[in-house]
Length: 113
Length: 122
Image 1 (tube, rainbow over the protein chains, first blue to last red):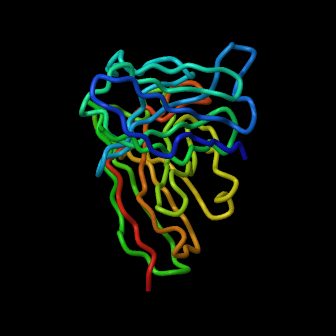
Image 2 (image 1 turned 90 degrees about the horizontal axis):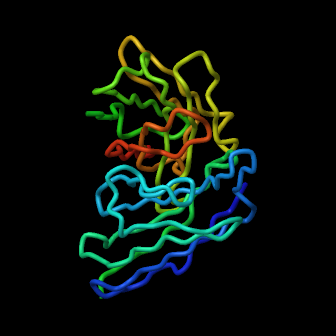
């Protein structure tokens, strides 16, 4: 199985500041034939299901604010929230959907400082 | 507007079968090209992908760790799909989500149900 490791496990960021979450896959999730990385980011708030934010490493899902962006390649990926809002407090997960079983990271708790 | 709602027993006894149905509204499973899936979440294992299926005569793809015990099926006439997990243990206690995926594999999970907590206990 591809192991997804997120860092840090938790972080606290002030409102308006930048938040950065990292995700490392144990093997590449890059599909050369279509030049895409099969990496997604989800946001989960208490009592709610996960919500898809980013897929193919950098494509923002419809309706997701543009302060959320994804980057990276190969095995190292980053989710960036450019200017943190109060409603962004949540747990964030990365997922690879390149190889079965599709696996998730352990989650990163983002708190407001 | 797409809505997904699970139904089924919330308490299952060890060694018995967990059965959940995802009722889909707002889109017709049989008329669309989406893939559909199941995911579960527990404190011990985090988020775990269970399997994905396509409504048009394609065999589901399962998590190998569960493949000997899991079956995903669809009833397009009722606009619903189901999860069946046999021989459950306490480790199968989790929140179970159904989800709408994309139109081409492999695909992320674009839209999730609210989830239903299933407890395995005698």
